[in-house]
Picture 1: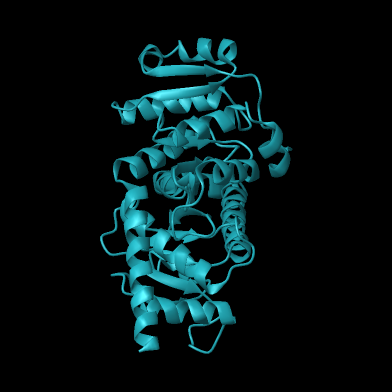
Picture 2: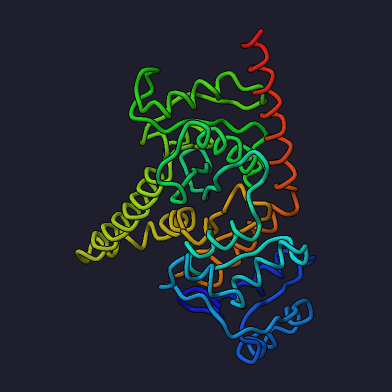
Length: 338
């Protein structure tokens, strides 16, 4: 029931996802008299959909603390409960981000070895696709948080992006060893010494994000959110510039006809719907946050992210890596004592 154009966009997106992933089924939480007729317009979707009726909805204006306390029968809460209870492999929502994080953390809890969940997404680069975390869940982070983000991001890149040996970089104000905050330098030292088989490349800078210098960029939520919103804003700015340029004169309009196909390819490559679906990593369950303003294609892609993470055993891989990280840290402590 969440999102700017719910529930129509959600249901149409589920139909697209069903065509892409014919083996999946759906639990839909919301106002059944309202959503069931929409689903029945897609007979094949209706055949693999089960409804769970509730009229309570978390609005976009609800504070996370209020949603956590008073929205226990909301569609968002019940959907997350289904993941906790093993009825669903993942939950996908276009609703209130803060409420989704708060409820999911309370219901699902964090995985062993993880103190704070992180938000991540992937984006196009000059080399392909990369991911960055955290994107807003944790404004302030210590070194241990950043190390945890690095491990989670590495597993995500392997699981969702299909990269065999993802490279990891810590976002910093320079690549020199002495630059950056104490937390960033300490995290770098830990990652250099870790026993995990990860490819830590050291510090990276802002221009390395679109360059795709590394596959996983690690930073605190304050910096990550600003970087993400800046990139989104610049994309809109250049799109506006292009529209103005090609409508500025008759010759420009004629020129557009010659390069229209190339521009369409560019638009598809940078289409935000293609990269829709931010993940709440570190929870004991798969939670995917769709952009509230996306369309059915974008929501289908968010569902696809949840499917990929479930099918490739994301949670079990996270648990394995953090167990190995813990064992390695214990060995280092023993060696330091002796």
